Length: 173
Image 1 (cartoon, rainbow, N blue to C red):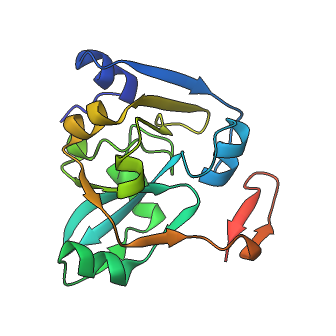
Image 2 (cartoon, rainbow, N blue to C red):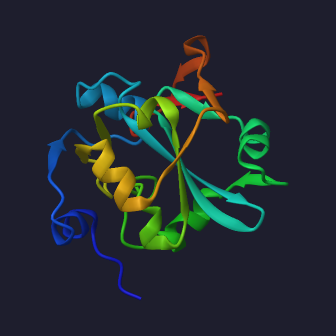
């Protein structure tokens, strides 16, 4: 099955968007900094398996997933993170860790943090580590049939941020 590239998909759906280039980065927080976007405005995509079905969870870059709370909130018996090595197989058209939140193209539900859902615009990876897509949130939610969630994620504590190697500058422990 052919899966269009993110920009090709938006163009085919006649959706307006802005492409934001930035220096190569591998974490959401580094990307927000390099793109000069507040970290609570950049969307991070987390892929989970909920009761044996894949789903995308969209949260602000400065947040992390709370799997137990998310499972309770969405009515799932069991939710786990999809291991990074499986993401390459699921998203062969994207750079590892830079998948855009078009779960509908991959047969996945899309859950979006309520605070992102309520914003006028949403910004996310364009399938690579050097471009972001910014578009109207209503257009995005209609396109992917996103469902807003109010639980299942929380802000990260910046005191646990440590410096790592130069290729992946930040790591959360």
